[in-house]
Length: 279
Image (cartoon, rainbow, N blue to C red; front, side):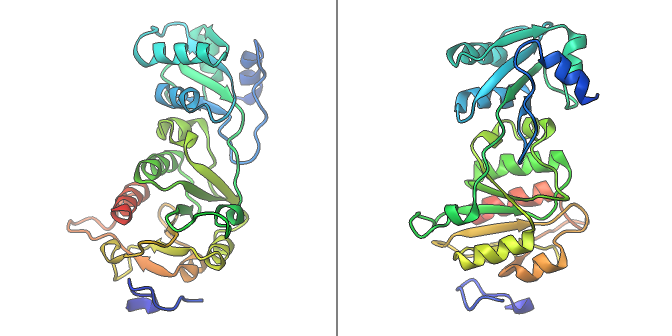
């Protein structure tokens, strides 16, 4: 095995301003105070529909741009809001735009309680069935669209848990929620002080970590970690994995490429790696 990493047979491990938005929202429930990982403001038709459909956290209000027709997904949102007893309000386009925090909300915004945070130790406790659990660990991904796309792929590929660092990383903003098209409602988030420390904690709990590194000789095709809890570690845009995080990974793998460009976008690379590993 190159780079001193373990082989696929599991050898020994390596050691607009917020005041204006609040004013608009105060027609009913005040916009919740941000804390934790975020997710209080959900924008986009599919994202809002999944918030109401999943019904895993409380939705306070749904706002519609009055120019939006109540057909298709919008009609489904209105029906779900009625079933869940969530107030549904129409706003003029000017007031709606003051509330909007993404580039395109598609005329639908919801206010909800923050996403719940989980603890690494509770996820992989000895009492839990953790053998098949898969985690995505993000090493300072700062572009909200990249994060949203990664979350969407993670949910579709069966990665249930997302580990985010407290600093130098985007949280669940309205843009992230919209880009994820509702995946945030089904994922479980862990917020950690540092990624390297989180990997050490995961190692103690029996979780094997695979860092995605374009310079790695071994590829994701070589990863064979069936029957063990696994963490896929993704680096930041441009810089990739930090030095310390790379050292803490049990295994480094690249994605085979056959064209002329140097590398894939982090969200595209994440999608390829997640579905390859899940296969």
